[in-house]
Image (cartoon, rainbow, N blue to C red; front, side, top):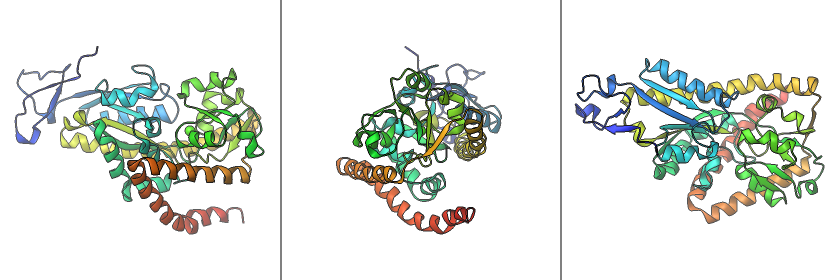
Length: 367
Ligand code: CA
């Protein structure tokens, strides 16, 4: 068993009351030390393969920013999936105190709280820009904090992939009938939609996708988009690359922080943590957008991938199923209903603006 990372120390003033010192770095004098002068050494567990482009590198960037911005007072060691705990046990590891923080995606934790899915992506829902508008300026982040509060966790938006790709398929999808029996790696609400369509969704961490697809234990997989899919070599294991990623129109990544660990930080480090997460939320989206078109060029021109749009009637069918499933989930789960009511009301409003702003503008490029 791992021993607790922190030991309680007495605070020397009201301003630093409740501070916790790192067990490995006791105060040099032996006297209780002010939080302001302490060095905090934290662990960050992640759901990504170590140093994975975009996602793992985003987590690394967060740790670097925290170190530099804090003048070396908040040092975070980043662990890839399975390096300290299995990829899909990040939530439990931070909630249980094995690590002070984690980086991943909220929809992996829908078994803990169904509403968590909404903070990553809703199929056919908010885009990255719209998601940020809801989270930061539309009440979404307050709801996210409320959902994680019983677990002793504080969530921060910390990265966005932008619109994902529909995925890699070893069979053509020409009609809704082609979804029947399809064994596909697709987590979150998207997986529930596929199941309703007659498919068999599975959730696998990124590190296991390539082998599962290559050995035929799955027929298809979604992952992210060209940048990451190229890095995984998924083009070697599947023939068709479909778009758009209806199931993840702008997936938000998360940084989760143990509330107990967060409360042990002095106010300036808490603020640095909040700002660094917001910065990574932006810079990761920039990285995905900048690298995706280059990777797509390589996939299509060098690796001769068969790039295809989903047929419109397949998308309409999936969109109808998505709305049914979300409504059914809301009818069963009061917390999901509350969060979804906020997100869907926001979406209805911002969609009117997006239509005459981003959508109208992008349309001018093909006039
Ligand atoms: Ca995905």
